[in-house]
Length: 370
Image (cartoon, rainbow, N blue to C red; front, side):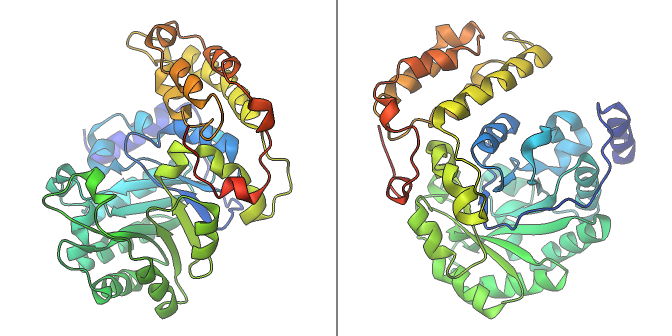
């Protein structure tokens, strides 16, 4: 079956009819990075319970998986996840245009092209960070997607690849891709080492060079520049926002998600009360129960652990956080498939009442480790 048939069939079989509309979208001042094996729809739902306005990104979805795989499984999301971007991996302009159109029809607010993943598997597919060596191809991909959709098309990239570490290399890449119509660039401020480092090492070993992103914004003031890489505290976010348009956080959002609780007030001017950790936890129980009902509980269906694994860091920094994690990681309890396990984990916490409403910036700028 060709791509067009898959595309039309998926839309006809989809549970809801999506109509592309103009949605009032917040600025990309704060976003949560696309993280392979982490930022799935359950993780994003959990993060959305903590922050209403920050942008969320899917895991990378390859064009091949949309042409040959289960489209609904790859693209379905929860209605409350907006603002939400679909990150695509690919290097064929026509295929990317087709998949971008599919993403827009599915209801995504942005299409992001991955030019930053350094894994060998991704390189074999001729996309990810290795695309930075072919700026004209990236420009062609961007133009094809821009011509296919009305929503934003953005690019996430590194500052260089292998031994190529000059600012000029990144500047020329961005300049050429910008000419194709891309106006938003997310800069992971590290080189990508394509040979010799694992993906994890590529997130930690190459030195961070935030000044490259700052300089890029000065040289291209008309572009939206977002910095990413190793950002962990509110103080760091504040410092970056003095130089660029936005900040994307990655692993810290996963390991210490309650850091995001103050984002709406601090960066978007939303005066709504900040949810306590208990409120976030309890708000996930109906969602989990519904997902288990829809997709089966255990066996070959959805497992409780598939959702609660994303919540292990919620109590980071509090007395009893270890007990909380241990309860949610208990394989015997998880096998029972009862969402009330979250309440049991909460009850094992000690001294929680002293921490339930952390409004002070001093707390939010600390990295807890319990």
